[in-house]
Image (cartoon, rainbow, N blue to C red; front, side, top):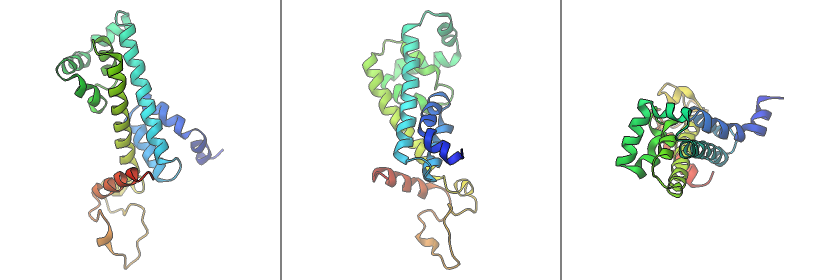
Length: 194
């Protein structure tokens, strides 16, 4: 079985599981796969958002249901857990919307929120919005930089486009190769439903 067949058959499931277990690397990879037409872009966003949402709901439930269990107590003893609780107490909505973007707080935060007094409905609603936003952003980055890794790093690549000797570089929305133009293209593609 070829890699293309495996990705076509299990790609979205793998992206969903990977987003829940690993995080950004898998989500960016989903964008690269979408850029190369191995999975649909909307499917990569939906699968990674769902995987992240489900994982965070499970961690929240773990904190809510088993807050007195020794394993949860060990998580609660971590410095990151205390930081998460302090921030949650000051800015509950903002924290729930942003914890997945904060390094070192991705796994402990939903457990911390589960041990707090945040209502389940509130967490579900805010977690859904955050998961979709996070998945769209990182899948979009992977999609935008998916053609040529050298171009995304500001190298000499041209994003995988074939440019003849007389190609008009002025028509390129990102002539400097910074990636900003590609990010704009991704946002436009997502808004147009491509």
